[in-house]
Image (cartoon, rainbow, N blue to C red; front, side, top):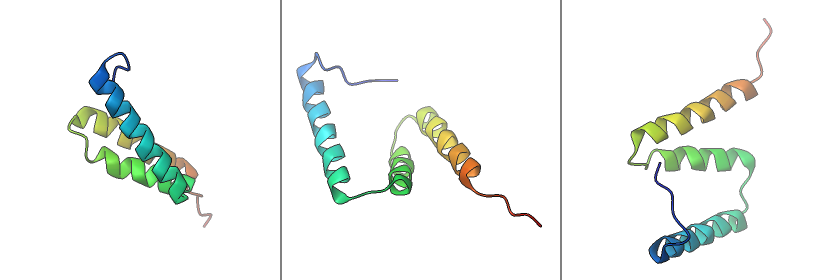
Length: 72
C-alpha cells in the first residue's frame, strides 16, 4: 500500500489537503452510519482494487453483525 510520507514536501501538501477534507466532513455534522457509507463510496474510487475489496469486506462484515436477527 502506498502511503503519504510527511517527510516529502509534495506528500505533506497532500496530507494537509486530506486533513482539511476530514475537518470539513466533520464540520458538516456526520454520524457513524454516514461515515461508514462515505468510506464505502470513497473505496469505490480507489485505483487499487485489492485495497478496495479488503475495505469493503470489512464494512460489509460490520453491517452483517449490526443487523438484528428476526425471530420467527
